[in-house]
Image (tube, rainbow, N blue to C red; front, side, top):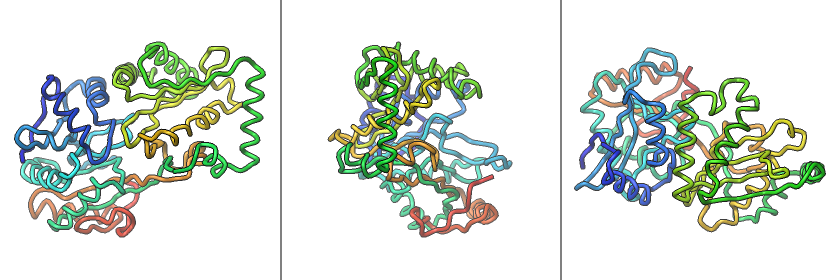
Length: 375
């Protein structure tokens, strides 16, 4: 098994990448070509990020974007890091099902040989209950390789065998459901309300423009954090959504008043999972909770036989979605020893100084105490 830098722009590489996506043990749309390539073009124009591919006989079995970082959460500690950005919410490598352990073994051996100035490997945005993470923990344990779970949080997840109506009844009190019905009725008095759900590319350019304008007009625009506030994030959003729509990987949910969108939701489809990517609403109608009304309609995902769960991609304790979606997905950050004996010894000291303990192969679901949020 070989580890190499991928030249991902050609058609042959794209075909290999797509085959890896189809066989992945755990879906991660943020590392699929239609999202990662626009991310790199917009946010890494200097080519600092390396796209590592683990392959056998020309077949891609694993993929991880990797960068050498000079600082670790504010501290001058050079390290290798799985590359993520503020609009990518899962950092799990794409690994072919059934090859999890051997891909991790090859990747870690490669970093042992080529660590350079990197003191350790850091991976963020990891779904801790995934088979890919379980395989990593097992490989570290088998090798006696030190690893530390340095941060753990839980974000809202939608996963249930209930119907949308039954799920809503269980998630919200009767008083809250009554309030939502009242808000919907009051909003309907202002004009004709319509819900539109699309999984094709029809009208995608207008939808993208409407989303960017709606988000820019709200608090994110005033704070300078809206996608349209920066050319790079605007370009990423436009390119990625266009490509996702063309591939049938995007669900667009729209709440419109007299034909004008007042709430929008973009969800990436990566069966058996889905990922709530971005939402925006018209703050002039905030008293009617258009975003919550849209999420009520979004519970229709529960009826989709191809989708078993949906990751909210939201912060822990989100004030809206946490009250509506009852399940939780554990997400963590791992730091892993690489290199020779001296480098691994230094890693052990660093991990302990960070506030936790290390062990060969962390127990990702609670057996090992997290070291806390790196400061």
